[in-house]
Image (cartoon, rainbow, N blue to C red; front, side, top):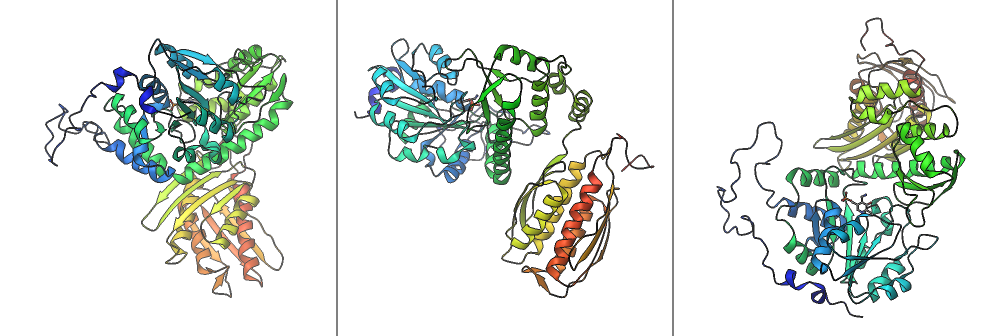
Length: 574
Ligand code: PMP
């Protein structure tokens, strides 16, 4: 079967003349724009030139996407969320009242809703017991007027991805458009079918900034397809379907590689952790394998558990009425704290103990610190102490995420292996989670990278400490082998640094020995703490490692929480 794009563009779309905006007709490169009836002066206190229509900005975002995804800018269309593009594909490639679209339930409900809005018939072909598409059966079911097939990959709400071969079979034998909705693909990028674009002219891949990029509120969706398909979408699209703020936020999110990577990794880890815990909770029957950021869970009484969780302030999605999903709830992976609230609320299911109603609802109407305190009061849990810092200078670009009440998880990349190893000691021995992505001018020397990383870790640490209520404030420790290290710390808020360590070698692990002192000084300054470091011993490597370990232990002791909610200071201020 040969795909012929022209044959599926309805006559009223093929023959229409698209709207030309003022900027589309622009000739020359003037600087006085009196062509679009905009307000000429920028608004005060607004960071962007939002008095103007977005102009060239979508093209800038497309160029960035093109570089990240390896797809030509002419093969990219931007939508007001991928929801908008789902609707536009129907408007561009099917005749209302005449054509059909095929979907594979249980799947994302929007395909069916937009089909109805566009007066198109929906042909459902259910997924099998493993939530797989049977491509041959689906192709047999498609008729001459079936114009679009929607494959949700990974699928919402089941969380599984389809085999690439299945998608290829649909692409090869269907003479309409196969839309592969990859809204959740950033959680499993290796499964993306974007590379198939070169092979199949009838493929449209949808992606979005709403999930792993964290911009659901900005509404930015993306379609990748042949330039011929993109031109039809552009013809039908509103001239400025995306606002300047949304475009700028998407550009910024694309530039924040380290944060993106850390978010994806931590969501995947929490999802797997949740998947391990849920089977032991009341009424749980099965957790389906997921490569997305949510879990489909079969329980013995979905409606009752759903209501119970909602009354406890935890909102999940009840999917139990969907075909193949009887008794199923879909649960999004939240923060560690939210997941804990879910687990606590769930544990109480079926027993008399129920959490106070409305925790989550109430938290939304209050400020962050109030919400944290409310949650702490309601659940007996103290808020999570974590912080992320992104800091760029002309010499370095550094992202640090720290979680004081962690498990010793370290993900460190500074380009200086020995330094990575030392920073890992802080996480492991301080029982904190520490993620560091540092890119610096190592071609000059390690100085800037080490110093700026220390500053960023210090800033993150200080931010994560928050109001410092209920901490032990002081810490010290004495370890190891031939070396002895002593680190005294006071998180009191004043910086003071004392260093009594000498090294016989000029470099340890290829790092100039003097930089270790520099690291701790920078940390003390950025955190605003008192830090005294002493060490003796024979072997420089041992000595510096002992210092990092002792430092980690000292930090652990200083940030440890006691039962009081008071500030450990007679001044009433830290
Ligand atoms: N596709 C799928 C499979 C989804 O689950 C969602 C959102 N729930 C969307 C698309 C919509 O994404 P957007 O926010 O980009 O409109």
